[in-house]
View 1 (cartoon, protein in one colour):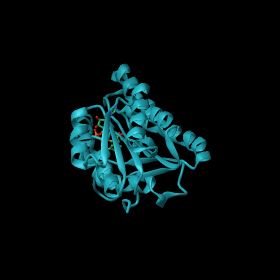
View 2 (cartoon, rainbow, N blue to C red; view 1 turned 60 degrees about the horizontal axis):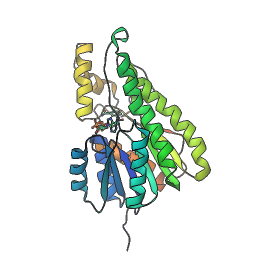
View 3 (spheres, rainbow, N blue to C red; view 1 turned 135 degrees about the horizontal axis):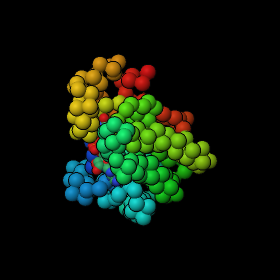
View 4 (cartoon, rainbow, N blue to C red; view 1 turned 180 degrees about the horizontal axis):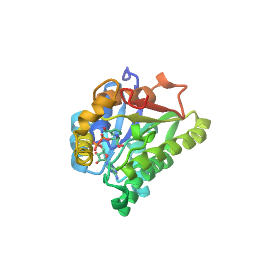
Length: 255
Ligand SMILES: NC(=O)c1ccc[n+]([C@@H]2O[C@H](COP(=O)([O-])OP(=O)(O)OC[C@H]3O[C@@H](n4cnc5c(N)ncnc54)[C@H](O)[C@@H]3O)[C@@H](O)[C@H]2O)c1
């Protein structure tokens, strides 16, 4: 008997797979019967993640998502190891500087855009070519993919740009029954967001974490596992008529 679960037998590639949301999603996907190929920058962190997930269910490829040749190798490795890809979770990210516009470093602007925009583009380009018809692509954007705020200029621009990429790829990939959507987490209780909040607290002269809890109608940060469950929805047949859409996972922050 084959594996059971929402993703039984599915092959899933997850970038940012050694990070908080990526690894929480990998854990859930494996519990749902998937085999996962994790990609991230740090081979040691990836190795530890695969050891936890079990190497019959998981493998890794150290990848910089900004580099086309590396992203191509990632998907070739996934196909060799597990077979054609069913799900791509393009999720690698970095926040970059938070600074007033006049002081915002230009080289950081390009670097942050490359990770989110070029990275997601390369995953779509090289991943969809190695995907089974009927697959699902999920790109992690953010609440700041649909609203602006001063300071994180590159990050917020990049998160908006991912929506344009998603919408365009969704229209081409629909011919093969492949669905493409973005997920938009609000502030999540993890190290990534703690780093953002410590910089923001300085700029705002108040506790940014408390500020977010006040402007989130549900009154709290989200958990990585809550984002993972929404990614599972988009990855699975539960969302079979959902493509080209933006899924807010933000406690109502953008309502
Ligand atoms: N934490 C939040 O509150 C929050 C909110 C909204 C959106 N997001 C987005 O969620 C995604 C995951 O973030 P997270 O919260 O798990 O943070 P995280 O820092 O734990 O995970 C991000 C991972 O991406 C990897 N990465 C960065 N640059 C890379 C590159 N060039 N190539 C390959 N991997 C690279 C990092 O090594 C890290 O493991 C990101 O896209 C982030 O922008 C996070």
